[in-house]
Length: 202
Image (tube, rainbow, N blue to C red; front, side, top):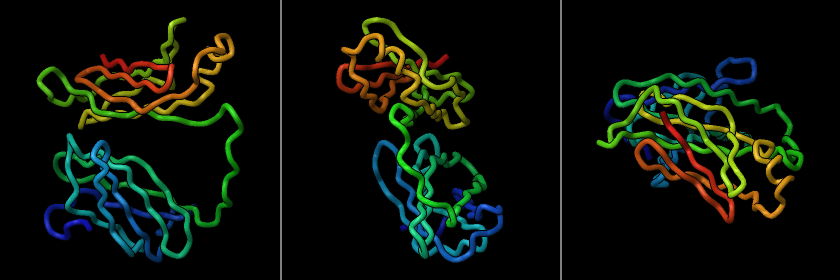
C-alpha cells in the first residue's frame, strides 16, 4: 500500500472516452522498473483527482502504472516518471465501452526499450537524444524513432516487428527475438537469442 503521509508524488485524473471524470472506483498498481517492487491502491474514487504519496522519486522513480476499474476488467497501463520534487498531474483515459481488440496481424507486434541515461559520475542526463538500433553480423538498422530523455534522464522508444522485418527476409538465418535493454551510463545494449542491438545516447 502507498504511504498516505508525505508529499504528493503524482496526481491522477481518470477520464472516460468523452474526457469526463470516470466515476466509480479504480484499483491502481505502480510497478517499479528494475526492482519489481509493487505499490497498490485499492478502490480509489475516480470521480475526482487521485493524489498518490509514498512512491520512489527520480532518478529511481520509473513505474509501470496499471489502472483497473473495479466494475469491469478494462486495465490501462502506461509508464510514469515520479519527479524529484513536486508532482505532475497525469490524465488517463479508460474506455469501458470498447470491445476487446483482436490479436495484431503477424509482423505488427509492438515492442519497447526504456531506461535511464547517466554520465560517468552516475548523474542523470536530461535532454539527451537516444536511439535504438537493431544490429547483426550483416549490418544495422534503426528501431522506432529517436527520443529525448526527460528531466529524470528516462527515455522510452517504441518500435514494431516491421522495423527489423526487412533484414529477416534477406537473411533468414537470423533470430527475430528482441530483448529488453540494460544500460551503462550513456549507452546500453539488449540481446535475446542470436539477435542483438544497442542503444546510443548523444
